[in-house]
Length: 134
Image (cartoon, rainbow, N blue to C red; front, top):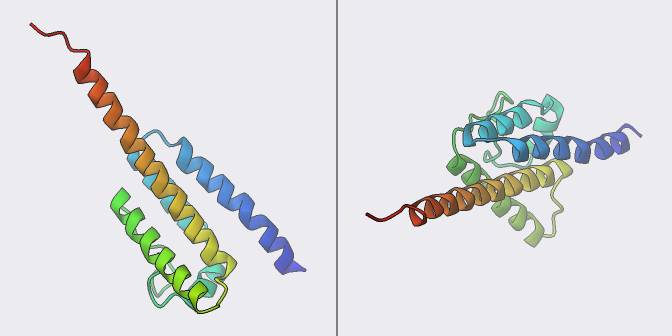
């Protein structure tokens, strides 16, 4: 019964942290929200991921979150998680709920970074387009 309750709580935690990341007003605030998400993981959840992660999950051997410093770090973690999930699925092994949650969060966060870059790029182009010529 406890497992069912835990499974039902995971989407709420994921939604909460995605909301924090999505409402961040700068790259550094987004990175800080990702770090907060990783810090929220219990030792039990980290141990479950580390049983199958082959050392690529964003936690160290002492079950502490790895430091995420940039959008590039997010993309690299997303890529590693996604590749591992695909390999598991191709081997007919179902990824754990924890692994799926990591995959979803890092995918969505990377998309938010990409969207943020596109918006900044468009603003820059608009700024140069409206400059009067002398």
